Length: 529
Image (cartoon, rainbow, N blue to C red):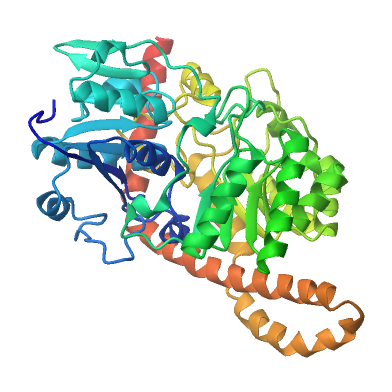
């Protein structure tokens, strides 16, 4: 419990640092996680609470940094004592860091609350054994308010829905909390609460949930919608108070609730016109939305320039295993339409997806690599993200692989490797775990390459060629900019991949993988005998 004699309390939300060499951590110091900001914004409206968010991945404004990485929490707790600390467990790969932070604050007088997608099933017991007092299960906006009121002695703790905690040897789980449907009851996310951060890319949302039911994804359930007016209000507030220009709409699938989405795009278009300023917006969207030309036109008019699309794989058998209702040929047709409308395409892929037991299909890592490279080249995707399958807690994929006794033990391959860059289970024959990982590095190494350094210069040389587009200067600029931007990003990607590879060689993962494979073989032997 907190000190009830105090007149005011401090609630500190911490977003744990990514593992030391996560290949995508380069974007982290330009943005922040939206969920912790939403929770902090609710607490900030409570009478007796001061609130701050510390994103360990974005400490660019005088943030106190620890020599071992992340924030200097000893300095923070000494300078501004936090009565309650909330820890964001939305990314499984950050969980070891989260537990380390939890132990520090527990030893220094704080009450520890954790929440996020990682905390499901057995992971709740694991969390409670690592210095965490309360686990929030599900969405946190309503739960955190009631839980803090309970800590103040104003509410019965056992009546707070959606939490887990330990009393003696018993783990108590209260009734589940219903999903939020009325978002207007909550304040707009307040990014000024993120202390020390320098944010260039602002995450915003309108829709929570996704009905696609992909086997590997933790986001399930019927989509729930906020109004377009609320999202527009949030964007305009950030533009006018933070001089924001770049936004990422984090909805899992942009375009759900079609008519309201088009209405939002028109509102965004009209706002930019009245402001005399062009915004840059990125979204995640399904490929089959290419068939909706009215939606795509509204998106372009609204300033949506980049679409992130989950292609996942060009291999039909893998698409079926993932519950993806699309073929590789359809994907190529849809891509052409997105290009025609002028979108920049960021393609997201999963290499080596494990097939279901009933599927009699085998393909070598070499052949799969060839298929992926050919598809990416044919689709003319601007940027790519190539990951290995991650059996995340709470997913159908993890449950299937557990039944098949294919997941490497956590004691050998810890949560910090659950970021999509490391093999975490025995792959389908004839591929080995090492081949699977090397294939991803080869694909990324071909796409992001040093040769693009020379192309950057050539594109600058070609810039005067825009004179041939005087009849349509906008089209000419778009064509030139696309090549210049992509070459710049691909050269920058080469630097990142090269740095990641160098750090990987120093990491003990290869040794841990050998131990994990040996333990898994022993387990299978014991099961068979």
